Amino acid sequence: MISLPLNRSLCTGLTLIIFGALAVGCGEKPAGGSAGGKGGRGAGGAAPVLVGQATTKIVPLTIEAIGAVEPIRTTAIRSQVTGTLLKRAILEGHNVTEGDLLFEIDPRPFRNALQSADADLQKARVQLETARAQVARYRGLTANEMVSKEQFEKITDTARALESEVLSDESRLATARLQLEYCSIRAPLTGRTGNMSVHEGDIVRANDTGTPLITINQLSPIYVTFGVPQQYLATLTRYRSAGILKVSVVPPGPDEKPEEGELTFMDNTVDASTGTLKLKGSFPNAEHRLWPGQFATVSVTLASPEVLTVASSAIQTSQSGQHVFVVRADQTAELRPVVVERTYQSDSVISGGLKDGETVVVEGQLRVIPGKSVVVKEPPAPGGEKRAGKDGEGKGRKKDKGKKTP
Image (cartoon, rainbow, N blue to C red; front, side, top):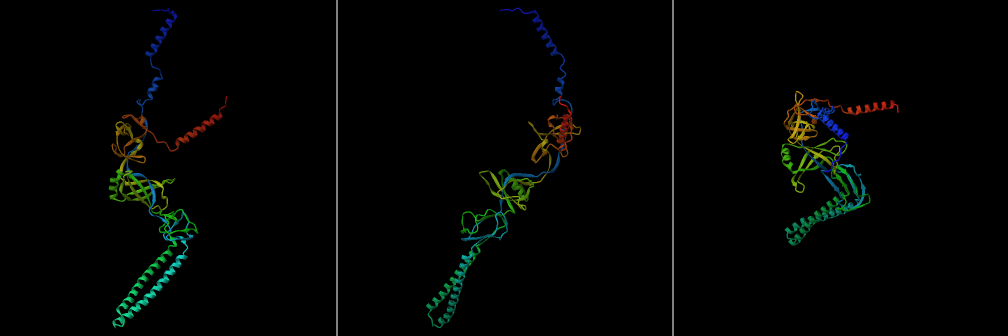
């Protein structure tokens, strides 16, 4: 081993440093150490909180879904005769009433056919009258054996054939009259017209399977079709058997006012591909806020029970379940396990653990310790913090302007 000589002054300095460190470690704690301890959750003092009341009120039991608006009645207008379009009596996108004239096709060929059928009928009737007169005359001659039975039967057969011809001509006349009526195409229902695909002078064809002349959709009343998961089938059946179920729809747009209607259709089968049950609600739609093809949020109200509720912000979740902090009469907090049945908007429905009128903490739970005191704060006025901030900024700017830059 190799030893090196040490400087005496160096050894003395190291000894002083070691003793100084020991003195500091065994002495009093710095003054700043106690300040850090006061900031923890276990420190004394009442925790500031905002509170609310457990109240009993009516909270609807609802099923939410997304639905599509469909017309109850819709029709694609097509011509039943072939001819030239003379007139468009309506405009695109306008309301029409059942029976209103939509289109007019050139009626002249069909009027001529009607006159020809009428003339044929008149001719057949004259021939039938003549044949009937001969039958009456020859019946007496046959009784006196002045005319053979074969000749009488021939005259009788001619009369019967003319009767059939008259019936046939009457049918042709009715068909001709109907074809003439088809030249004036009228609205079969009340609704709103869509896009028009023809113009004056176009040739329209009977029963054309292509694009219809125009489509009319009924807007009032109207359907909203939606689907719900199949597990709601038993619930819907039970509540629907007790009465009519109300349905509300909020169409997209700035106006969030719901449209109110009734559940009028429940499909007789569950869609195997999606596992959903198809439902339809009927709505008066007097203001035409619901439009065919539009998507909307649907809410089916099954019942409107009176239940105990608290603000949803009061519900806390831990490993042992859900709970709230109840403020007792002595201003101390109690951790109370609760059973949350469901939520509706900003409220939670409580089925166990609370009583009507109890005070619960809705804000500031992080600083609350069970059994310790709390102090109830006043809720801030709406917009109060913003006004205070603006005033503070204004004062600061005035002071800055008064200072001189060095």
